[in-house]
Image (spheres, one colour):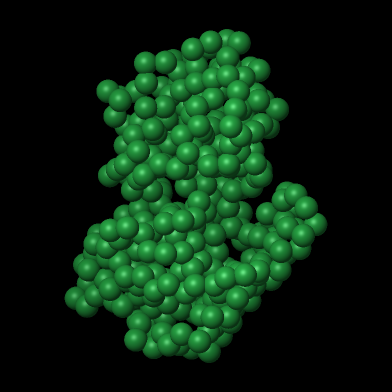
Length: 348
């Protein structure tokens, strides 16, 4: 950790926070703000979500109701006086802030809405993603410094040079062999419906895994699953931070067959917890797993088959877990915050 004489006053913009949202951006902002506060900085998060219980950082509630909330949230930010801060770090919705309001304005592009528009279902949702993609372009030009969370995002924003990945707190997410479940467990974190493809994972688990591993379970950290998800599936709902760490330590394998991830924090949390990962080849998974070197990356129709193979092959499981632990050193929360602190200090 780099020590500086004067703490900074940092305003972080994030429409999402884990107090009410399931979006990965909100969880990453919460972790980043917490680590910055631990390091002595004065941090305030401006969000449409209410404050996170017992957070170590400050919170300003920018409440928006009705339709087009994210666009109206961005407009509301324009009316807020940010002159008391040294740094503005936006994780979205800063595209109207083109006039200098703080000494340093940093923008993080957490993936590309243009890329997500290629896979999302429905004309209305595709149009919304394209509009958000143009807002990302504008935001990248408004900020003093823009970073992306994975190299693949630069396909859409080639003028952005800096890549700073998301980070996981490996002080919490770490292997605990004594907690490992006494039967095979596959862990999934995401949504039953939509791009995370939880429903398809459950179907393949029941068809391809249970036939070979009858005592296996699929644990799903989801809140949108049907009342009866089928045999072998255990729906965990929303978990506390402590319980999330625990289920990563209890599981045998982690699987997230998403059709799009800008990064994919759960991949990193699983790898840090010593789990082998099975994923589909989305941009985030390819980056986090070093193009599949440290995980099993397969097309969607092979997910069930690969899960069964990994669960039944102890040596392969251990080898993948070792590679994952090595790779995750690139994505520690401490190293990510070090790099952001350096950006914050690069005054114009």
